Length: 517
Image 1 (cartoon, one colour):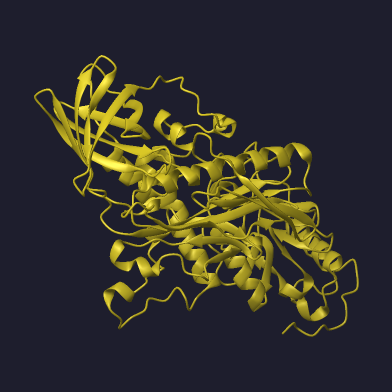
Image 2: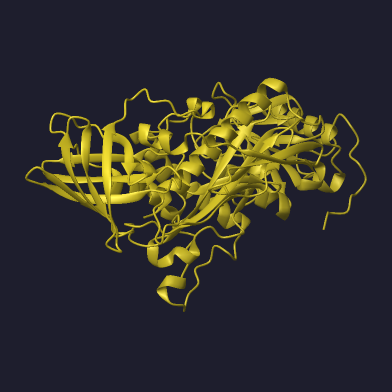
């Protein structure tokens, strides 16, 4: 079961889909008591060992789970009421429970796979039962059973280590081994407090997942669950978490990566649309029909178009190979809900495929460089870009220098209305095409330094490396605009089309400049 697809239906942001699917399929039980649809949680003993049990049922069918407080790992249960007896079995441990209601709750016996029989006594656990773990108070979505599972656990601090100009410290939960960093310094105190609090919540959620993934032979089904090295910059704090698992009851083993990114100045956790967004603001709310439509109809096709410009060879299908090895990264459907996280090179996006093509998942090359990102502020508008140099031409968020321009000329449309044509050199032309793919169907500003020349609606990508600045200009206005560009950007005579422009400039063009290699 794919992590990315299930997010649409389950609405889970902190858990891997296969684990969430397992929980919904095996652990979501039906009520034990006919009058209630809520899970019934019990605490008690199995022999001399303390346990917590969660049961749900529908009619006579009952499913659930339990854990020994000493080990805390989930053991799944499934069974039925037969008369006044509840018979439950565990497929992973081979345990068999036979229980009856009594005044205190449930009582009966457990018989192990080795035929050892011990008494069982269970009493209902109140919803206000304490977990003795203050860190869990800030975590929403944990059930009473899960809070009991994490009760009394503590995190052990590691040594402080440098990370660039900042310092971080790892914290480890000893039973599961789940380890995640905290930031010691280098950011504003309010932001640092929010980020570290979120990191602690995320770590406890991973610990809960580790216990909830039922394995075999008394072990967790989580094979790997670890955070990768953090990305720390003046603007962002981020990291990715990789896990692979084989939980009892799941159809097959699986794996996935989930990224987390924070605004380093405010501590706010960011979403993918805060960093890469194709469309009109504000972005649609997550988990809404408009959001899913945007991801499939706008986001995924634009990502494919952008990656085709950036990684032409990698985006070619692997023809002649077996179907499972034909990783078609040009298929938009593999990019609509990618894994993502920040790196030093930009934003990593991880494609996902059907089960038969899982080796194609998360290629190592699919990074969107920083210059193609569109970071938004908390108010929903594009965050402030660095002030452009006065001698640059800015198209959207792309800055063009004199070395990017092949030629500037007067340009007339079919009706004879004058404008300007700017032909770019090959490297700049590729950057422009990628930028226009990203900004398609938006209002784009073309500016000279901080002076706006024109604002226009971008209706198609510019693939020929030629910008046309048009409007209701007179010939004199078009020539005046050309003069501003030539003089401000210090263009050479060879970069100016002599037809209509030479001899009419307010400055003297520079001497010939060699084209960049």
